[in-house]
Structures are given as C-alpha cells and as structure tokens.
Length: 377
Ligand SMILES: [Zn+2]
Image (cartoon, rainbow, N blue to C red; front, side):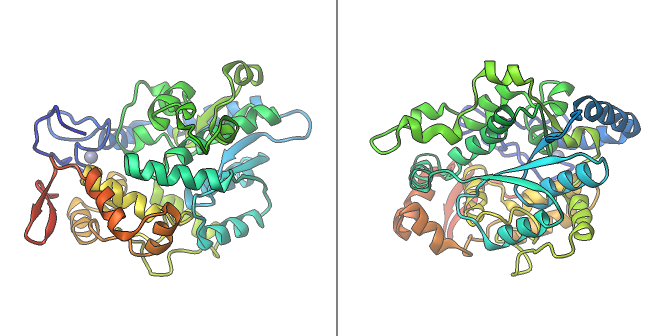
C-alpha cells in the first residue's frame, strides 16, 4: 500500500516502471534504480567477472564424482540458459532442481522434458497438493496472491537439497531486486544470495503461521529453510549467474532458441496481458498472478516485459509505452476457469476479492469500470 505517500504515481523517465513497485527507488531526475543498474553494466569489466566465475567453479569442482552445483530450474528460458552454459560451456555437472508449479502448464512440462533430454540430472519436488491448493486459495483471498507458499518453496527446496546432498554451490539466475528495481544493499548482494534477505523480503512471513485445522506442522516441510547450522556445515554458497555474465531476458531467449529449437512458446502467439510468448509459461496460475500485480500496483505484465527490454536497449520507451497501453489491462482469460476451480471460487467471489485488493489510491471507478488515476505516460 502507498497510504503514507503523495498520491501521484510517477513513472520512470527511462523505462516505464511506476514508483508503486515495491522497494523501487527513483532518483531526483525520475529514473529508477533498475535503469541505473542497467547502465552500470556498461562499465563492468566482464572479462574480469568471467575470471572470477572460473575461479569459483574451480574451487568447488569436486575431486571425485557427484555434482558440481545445483541450478534451481523451472524449465523456462532463463534457468535453462544458465544450466546449459554451466554444462556445455564450462563443463560442470549441475543437478537441476524444480519446485513444481501450482497448476502445471503442458507447455512448461514439454520444455522441461526436451531440455532434460539434452543430458541433465533432475530432481522435482511436488508438495502435497491438498495442502498447496488450500494455501493457494487462502493466500489469494487474504493477499490477492495465490503463490505466497510457492515463493517459500521455490526458495527453500534448492537449499534443502544442497544440504541433503552436500552440494555446496547453487547458481541462481539473477538478483531480481537489482535487475528489475528494488532494494539493493550492496554489490555483494548482487553476487551472493543472502538467505536472511530472502527470508525477509520474499516470503513475507513465517510458514509456521500458516497452520490451521487442516494444515499441520508436518505439511510445512517443503516450505521451510534448513536450519542455519546445517547450511553452515555444508558451507552452502548461493551465487547469481547474472553477476558474472551480462543478463538479458531477451538474449537468454535468443540463446535458448538456438540451443533447443524445440522450445515451445505460447500457442496464442503471446501470453495474456503482454506481447511476449516466451516467458513464464510453466504455471497456469501465472496469468492471474500478473493480473493481480496490475490490480495492486497499477502496472501489468506488458509493462514489466517492456521495461526489461528498454533497460537492455532492445526497445525504445515509445515502443514499450505503446505495447503496455495495448496489453497491460487484458483480463487473464486463458485458464481462468481452471484457476477459479483450483482456488475454489465462483466468478462473483473472485471479483469481490479482486476489488478488495484493488488499491484505490491508484484506481478510480469510471463510467466503464475501474481505471487508473495516473495512467502510464
Ligand atoms: Zn527505469
């Protein structure tokens, strides 16, 4: 919520991101910190970063057998790009670890299968579906976000497996807070995942609070971090690939099209609410997830995608603005029936919950329904 601030929404002068994005910082010229991060990349000595990377992996490469590292892997273009380079460019033997989507999409499953056939070992954790579904319904009602527990699981499971298998190195893709606008405490945070920061920022609360008459303590196992002593005993070091190699969602996609020509995209030619057809295809609930981001913060999936491309100079601001105006407000019709069924809601119940989470400081009701008080400009 933005209750304590001035009510005018500002949009970044360089990209399109509004200052309603949680934790984003604007400078006096009205430019967001994700745009500054993008420009700072121009001055980075990427050869030196590559040498630093090589030194890390040489240090961790095991002397005998087993895995060199874990890659938290959804099967999408970004995590597949990381895994592919680690294995085929740097000769590492990564173990891919997937935390199951809430509502698995056949496209994502097919992409995972194709990628695994290139020659990878894979572990997938699929938590108790009765519990997962109950939590999704509850979190959608309470917070307008059906994925709160999924966020916890996707963060916890790779660390659980690092500890259990004694694999001390994890390669995450990118540090979202610095790449896309958010809180960046230091350069070290762009390089190394701070597990305490993850717990504070991304989970938002303690899974122990999720227990009710149906969800018991033992049901929380997939969502809990191992204890600190166990993480320290194994010496888990979690690094961001994007710190060492220049990161671009669009370039990753170009790389994957070559590495795996069978990579499937959205059969509609683009995904609900945006102009891309290659991103976030593995979970049928994601269309609804991004729509709720629009309701809560006033920026949609097209704005999100356009900002990433503008920051990497793959699109002008004017092009992005036009695409965002065209697609941001599209209702997530694809899979909507399945989403409602999964969350245990009727359409009127759904609409009531959406409006409860609509931020009325940024939305007003017009003759034709809700509209943004400060539209993208
Ligand atoms: Zn910006």
